[in-house]
Image 1 (cartoon, rainbow, N blue to C red):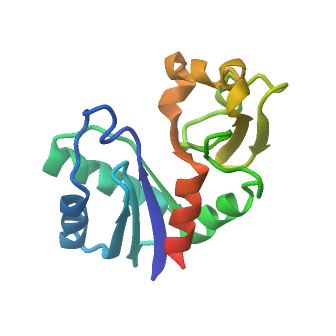
Image 2: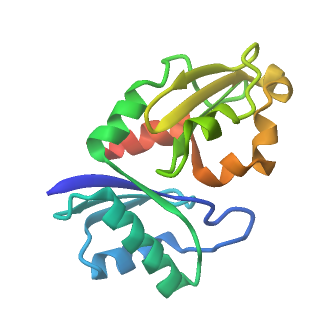
Length: 177
């Protein structure tokens, strides 16, 4: 039985796409997911399943959102090992705090290298780690306005990502153990 992380894109943000995490946990358990845990209200779920294909889980979870919450949202599912590989690549000094902003931009499958290249990053201000399924970005808060990352929201590539701050990623990693 494999352990997975599900990252739901854009739920419970700004009062939109409301999904109660306790209800989501219950819905998933009723759909044969095992050992379901949620973390914070922004759509982070850890679960076990005998089905080993992440794309199967992505489709099932997107359908559960439509059916039970009337919410259209993309879901990225990663195996425990893949999630841990990404989390372990976060530089030690990356913290999301008053002086530093650090995020992991997780890629959906349909993203291309051209899409990744279109992410607005001013490399003079942003530290980056490029990975297979993610981009890790860190910037001093004083330079945040110069980073270019605030321009991502209007870009096509924004629809191909789900973003978590590094503190959340590290907490999910701890919950996986």
